[in-house]
Image 1 (tube, rainbow, N blue to C red):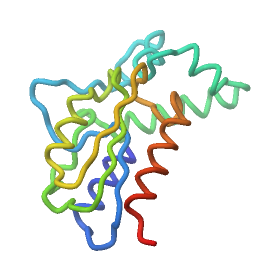
Image 2 (image 1 turned 90 degrees about the vertical axis):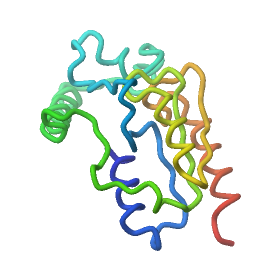
Image 3 (image 1 turned 30 degrees about the vertical axis):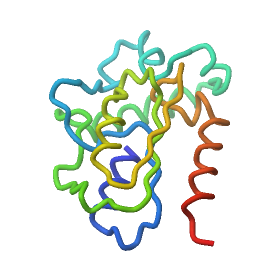
Length: 163
């Protein structure tokens, strides 16, 4: 959801955004590449739908208490209401032609929620975008590959941020 918000904001107020970083986000519609609403996955497939290595993910983010599980379930319920019947879709008012600032797109090659085809299409649609793809990573590169994600962001900002 954060990528959708960042793309929408950058499109509406491009003069206020100097750099944009997007992780595995819908920004356009590809009719031949479905986006999966993770909430439609059976509970036993939820984690394998989001991440490439569920066991590795669980080791990085263990559920420690019953409160953690309740919070996760509450978050899923809120997310389901946010998506409604439309599922995961781009902002209908999004104008990609207004997003001209340097943009870093980070994608997991094995993203089963928002497939890599969306990252490649965004890279083509945005005039100043670069796409970084991590192998053996799903929809959550910041959790599955935090060091690679942070290195990519640091490198991007070092090259594009004002002195």
